Image 1: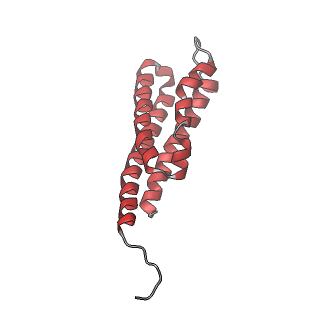
Image 2: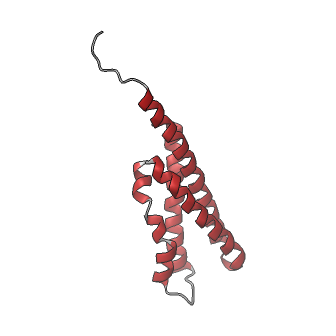
Length: 131
């Protein structure tokens, strides 16, 4: 894997793990929603982030591709929170930045890594035998 592709994977993972950490701390300790149980909020908001974790850690392009759609949900949710709860706007902006980072890193990683894998499949493998 080339260095720029590894940096894109690191960008996607930073955004993903940052979102996981931010949402857990935000809704569990910093500012829990008063009318909803914390467990329900975490189940709805944090559990979907656990689904692509293994594929992201292993650098699978397909997982990065579909996880980028998941990042768009968190981007939209962050924008809604920024306008709906002005007292927690800082957390919402952090969510917006992390989800944009997650989306950008994931979609670009999927694009360039799949091209790299396709190119590797097309090049002949040296067998080490003399002709």
